[in-house]
Image (cartoon, rainbow, N blue to C red; front, side, top):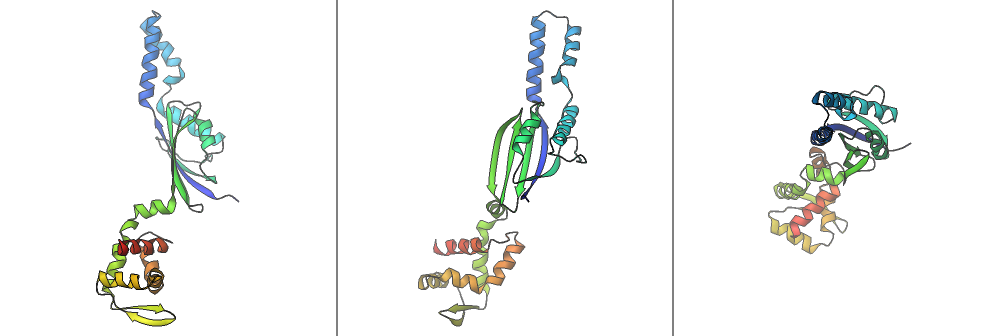
Length: 230
């Protein structure tokens, strides 16, 4: 069974490209000395003249035919809808679906929490124009202010009456009154970071959950260490 990747698709009509193609065709037809009324009739039969809403609706139908979207997929006027795909975004299928719709820009945002990645793709006229991919944990870390957690851990330690630590299999209570005392502790014990982590493990878990940094306890304590040793 594949890891399911969640996709959020949005279709954008390329008005600039439409104007460029439409105007160029009129210029070409006028050079052929064709009457204006006849030019209008010819333009109305060109595929490029199909309205935006119809093109988006036809594109979604093409996605259904290729198995990208379910038959009951709902989409708004912008052509937005969500769907799941196995192992990653269906880039090849989206390129295939877009071949008949050169005026549509296909934007797909995707996320696979099991494989820990997320990203975006932009497709037009059957070609992949742009793809950006991110490590999901790193992205969430940046979005939720992970780089500031060192200050929060420092404040927690300085405001605690004491913390219970284990050094050489001996239980001790220790109080940190200032940053200098914490720095000295790190200089005295090579495994100071592990000692601190073990002593505030419950707080780290609670902190990570409160700040949408689930399973980032190692990164949080490393961020604290960087702050102490800088």
